[in-house]
Length: 198
Image (cartoon, rainbow, N blue to C red; front, side):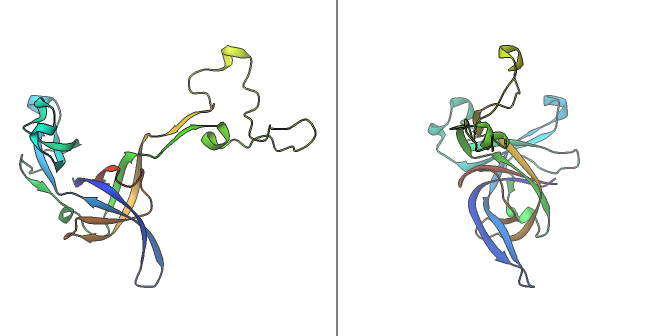
């Protein structure tokens, strides 16, 4: 299974041979180092732990000083995977045209009303008596009994883990560790992304 960690660089556009414009997101991916292999016998599951952005050992917790990386993530692997600790995972493992899944933390938008957060229509009847009511939530029911967890109400929006699937790799630049993915991926510039083959 193919996987790698990367950071979002930003969006741009490329052009196909027939002249069509393709919106792409550039991701600076890897190189990542395999820090540990989890086994079914010892850990109860099979996974590879990889790290990116090596830092001084003094800058990480004492328990992680043998793995001095800013970010560590695990990816499930099967019994046929031939990985061992110390191996390097790079963009060379992928090919142009591959489909991938990308997971990351979306942009935080702070406290938002129901019109923006849930797409409510608002009160569109601009007649007498609807002053300052255009983006109002409307009736929510009878008191406390109707307001339960999960009800569509104003609240904090964004800053959630989002996974976007079926993204195509348009171009790979192994010299600069860049992947060009067709479409948008979650997060701000610099957001850590987990990229898996789909």
